[in-house]
Image (tube, rainbow, N blue to C red):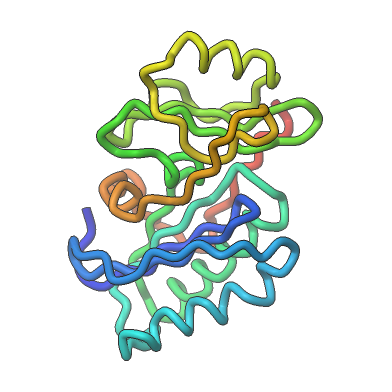
Length: 198
């Protein structure tokens, strides 16, 4: 896991996330519901979060960002900001699936986002490792899986499945999922995960 001051971002879902950690201490963990305004407001919320603790972007040691799957435009917003900050400030950059960003680290977690067209972005994790890798499934198949795995924690957005679960990112679980495998070697080469071709 990284050390120092870290900025955490995700905008793959309709709710965007801005978090700040110093070593293993959570300073800020905020979700904002700004449908269709993420591009305008994510930078504002990053500045507000840093200002609250009298930090500037130059104080950051690393940045961590969810890279999808999710909304085509949404995924690109947080990633573009993260790449710009990492490249211009020579920061370490960590990337993980946006689905993994929502998982509870110590619990087997089913994570879902609405992929539209009767489909779901879907994955299962435990302790930052895959149980089932990110994919797109038919909504009926997801409901069946959930019924068969009642002991799994549901994370993400399940409203499109008729299930009243709409959770936010747990920043400490996000942080614990980061490791050397997530560390980016070439910031300019990182691309989003879309999955739409599945």
